[in-house]
Amino acid sequence: QLEVLEDRLEEMVHPRLSDALSNRKVDAVQDLRQILIRIGFKSVELQYTKIHLKPIRKLWEEFDSRQRASKLASEKHDADRLSSTADSSSHVPYLSFSSWLPNFYDEVLLYLEQEWKWCMVAFPDDYKTLVPKLLIETMSALGASFVSRINLATGDVVPETRALAKGVLDILSGDMTKGIKVQTK
View 1 (cartoon, rainbow, N blue to C red):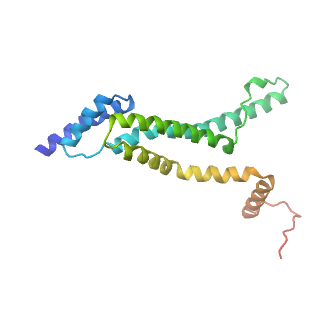
View 2: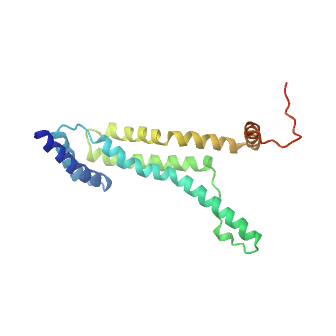
View 3: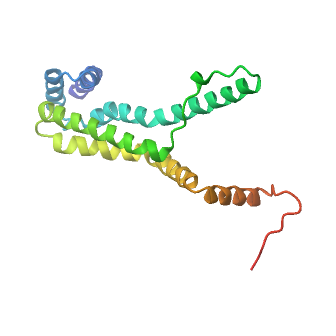
């Protein structure tokens, strides 16, 4: 019976804790954390990282959104140019991943500094583990798309690399035009 009551209490506390973490309500976070500790939960780490991973992930995904917008604007610009009604104000400039990445890192660093300061007040005993855990979880969540973007970006650095990549893909897909001879040594 006590276990059932603890589970119900936990179910009542978690939404309030999420709200308090999201809205940076230090007193509420500390009170709710104490309730969870009393019923056997040692940390709010999972809840904290879940809430604060979202803004960093959103920042990361903004690059894709910007690239899609740039591509759509470019296609629209090309279509408008072909129909002689070009409107250059709708053109979104292309931003390479290698140009965007330092800004992303600056934003993440700023966010983590703010989190560090807030956690020092809200979690004086846990801030030294919470913020590094947030960074670890962030990099884990972004890992696959990070590798993919790096691979794409390094292919864009040198035109020859792009040509090589296209050639390799053409060979692998069997999509080579007739008359092309492949040198073998």
